Amino acid sequence: MTISKRERTANSESDWNSPKLVYAISKLSVDMESRYKDTTPDNTESQPKEIDDNKERYPSPCDTIEKIKKGEVDNPSTSSQTSISTPAKKRKIKDSDKIPLQKKLALAIGAAPLALPLVTATVFITLFLLDVVLLEPKYSSLVLLLGRSFDAVSDPLVGFLVNKTQRKGNTLKYWMGFAIPFLLLAYFMLWVVPMKNGENQIGILCYYLSIYILLQIAFTIYGVPYAALIMFQTNDQRERDIATAFRMTAEIVFAILGIGVVGGIVSDTLDSDSVCDDSGDVNDDWLKKAERKYMIAGGAICALVLFSGLVTFLGTNERSDITIPSSKISTAKATKRVLKHTPYIYLMASYFCMYLSVTITQGNLQLYFKYHLDKVDHFTYAMVVLLVCIGVGIPVWQAVMLKLGKKSTAYIGVLILIPCYAVLGAVPSDTSVVIVYATCAVAGFAIGSAYLIPWSMLPDVIDNYTVENSERNESIFFGFFVFFNKFAAGAGLGVSLAVLEIAGYDNEACEQPDAVQNALRLLCSPGPAALVLLYAFFVFMYPITDKKCKENKEVLKQRILRERYGADFHRYVNRSFEFDNEAIETF
Image 1 (cartoon, rainbow, N blue to C red):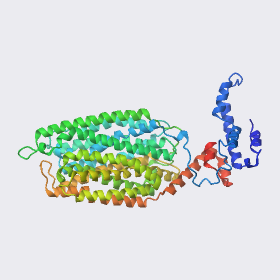
Image 2 (cartoon, rainbow, N blue to C red):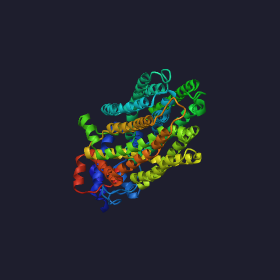
Image 3 (cartoon, one colour):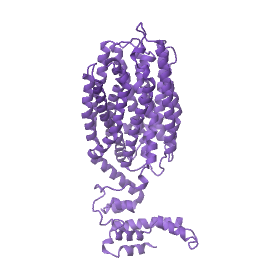
Image 4 (tube, helix red, strand yellow):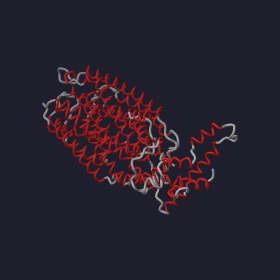
């Protein structure tokens, strides 16, 4: 079938003379002829079935015209009069851009090697170092601060390496698989006491600092490619947001699982009456029992991490047809350009403040329950309530975000979270357990927005950067984002231990002075509340609105069309012919 024959068919009626339709048909004709040439056998008479299959797979443009006339396909010349920059009606996502449910689940399960060790270490490491290892608060703070500070080198470095080794295929997945053995080794050794409790403080400091640095490196090698993996699953932003919500929900589920597993195993070591002997000193039998329990808990978490890592490694693949333009400049210049991108600066600042607030609260909540509320036996249940409400809140916040926008959703979360911090600072030591659980439930629901919003904003920042610089550098963006995530956790715990050291915390005593209780109230109420207000300020300064996000999507869509149609695209756009998005996708 020749071009002229298609043009005669298209011109048979006056409303089929649209230059836009003629252009689309001519382009489609060239594509179809090349495909027929490549796929049709030499002996067409002997293999009619294959020819019919090819025609069914690559329909004739004239057949498409007939479908348009019958109403089966919209007429691009009459179905829409909006320009390419005008938001189109809600469209159906192409099958190639849909992420299958099983792959979404495999991606979500991949959050376990990060969530399980990170959350359990954040929640239990403070009490473990102070009351089981008997490491002084100043040395414990050095372990956490220096270990996290090492990420200032490891996170960007891993981001650079991932960016440089990025190829079509499963590069990111292989990075993740490489990290799993080191992650398992470092996490298990974190709960091993290398020498007699409380003796040789410098030796214990060196041991835990080395293990902690190895753990952070393993987190980085796994976390940076995992965070970028969603970008290589689909080109559709809505599908990416849904996959991100799956991932955030999975993180909360695994956090709950981790707290439940570790808390359930070590729960009988949290009884204050069994810690001290008759002389008021720490009981040696209790210390040995606590060491054994924490090692068992560490082994259980390692088993879960290994299983989930295998599921993600075997159940995910990177789409080779998603091309991410690589940087044409050096890594140093690309990093400098990324760190100067204004939306990224405000996003990182907001995320750092919120995550620091949550980490400070989580890291000191166990001590708060033990020494201020005298309800340490309720701590595990309170944490489960908190995390369950975070998990329940994420789908709700996802729906609110799609309805009201990301910035408005962040403000609503702040308005709910601030009163919860006020309650933690105001309640007396003999307060009712019901009030404590209710506060944890409401706070968890509000924190769900803080987990979801920054990670949903990050792809928008990358798209904005791509529009301005014609390059993406995903690994650099995610590398620094993961760095600020982990640095906030380490900084929060390190600062908390430094405050406890100043307040006079004695890890070999069974009772703590009033100054320590006041310090714990400070660390669980006004300090985190101030950081939440800073988070709201940086979200307010964040310049990418929902309207700007849509405009960036349209610009990137035009670039895709330009790459597909080359000079023909420029010629027709310069003539001001309007392209209908749905018609272009149909053809």
